[in-house]
Length: 232
View 1 (cartoon, rainbow, N blue to C red):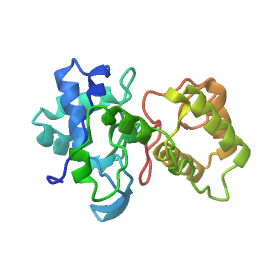
View 2: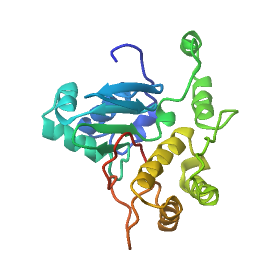
View 3: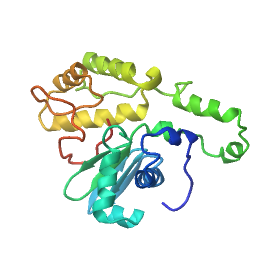
């Protein structure tokens, strides 16, 4: 993934980790490493579908990529997944870690193929507008196809809840897909989707977690997924 380019907006200076050189380097590494389009990768004989904003890594693989000690690299990645940063989510099993850049569309909004020349000609006046438009709806698809097992009412309640707590009241398609996948994983583990959704809305959380009495929102996902997962 040494070819191509990514966008690095000035709003990165407003993040909670900008003044931390180590965290900033790790965040930029995540942006540079994540896939920009859905693709399937094979990891130790397992085929895994990556969505935009995701990549696979491991402790030593990450350390080598960012030129840090394994313990340091891993600690910084984990810090980026915690409050107040919440820049990524990390879902691990014994063979790999799936990293998902939260709000991927904010950092790398979709663009049509072949627009490189136009991007070079964007004026200073146009750029803020383009950034805003890519973060908004503006004719783009803002919903996803739901499988039959999804309880429509509860799902609608959760979407409304996410919009209520999201900046600008908007929820990206990527966020919907990632959380749908998390809900699917919980369903496969025997949890009732409607109860999981109700727990999230009642608790004021962003994403889905195993049912738990008197739960507070975990800092990181509390289960080990069999395949891919995603951000909150």
